[in-house]
Length: 356
Image 1 (cartoon, rainbow, N blue to C red):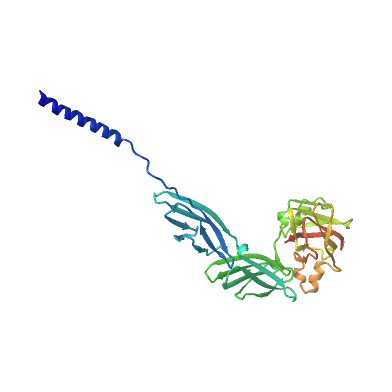
Image 2 (tube, helix red, strand yellow):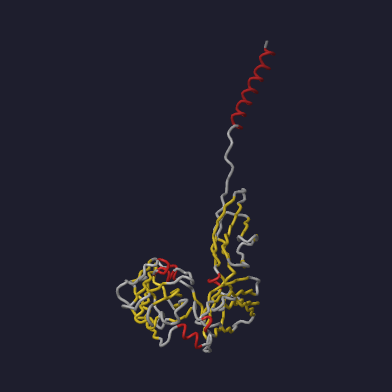
């Protein structure tokens, strides 16, 4: 009997030990997690508008990956990166901790052509001649100018290619043209800018960005196809007409959402009646309240547009022509008005435009 009790006691003790062991094993501690923190700043290269220095401020990481939004990957701690074109790029810094956890930080970069390169076009002093040039935050490897010269009389476009830094080009009187300049830097980056240009220089039409427009004199025959809206509708083949003796100053007023500096304006003459319906005397005026006006430009012409063109031997193309005028004393205004005080009889104009 004693022999039997002793083995039973041993079994009970073994069972108790195993039970305790199971209880201990069931308590599992959480694994240690290290969360990385991705952070960085970007410093532009002052000598190259395409190049940026990335300053890593990340914490708790063992490795990292930079993606710059242009299909490139870099694993340096503080890389320098050069983009090859303008546009929007999203930088993604991805960091990894020793426990395999991941963190991201995203930053958008906008490489606008105008932030890298500026274009200028100035009169040379010779009639209708313009000298072009660029200023760029980079070293120029090559440059290409594509100048489209639009014949004001026939609308035929003549394209000129030029690879010089400062080309000089002569445009036709009254022409509204355009050009594109493309620069490749010594690092292979490419930037292009396109602009409109007249014989007075670069011109950006702001007429259609107006928020209000009014006049004190509309078409006198109630012809909706020739009412005052046609003067600024952007269509060079529609016109405004007042077919009677000019009774008092004609005033066209345009309002813009914010003060803007107008440097140039254009008047397109009518399609018939020689110069008998052209303006003879006028003022360009600016205001910031719509009540108090400042004189910006004054013109008086002894002969009308058609007669001016006839004197240049352009009798067959004396209509539908733009005439460009530089503002004598430009300033920033929210309101602009064209105040015509004399004509050569009646009044007929195809288009009136303001340029900054």
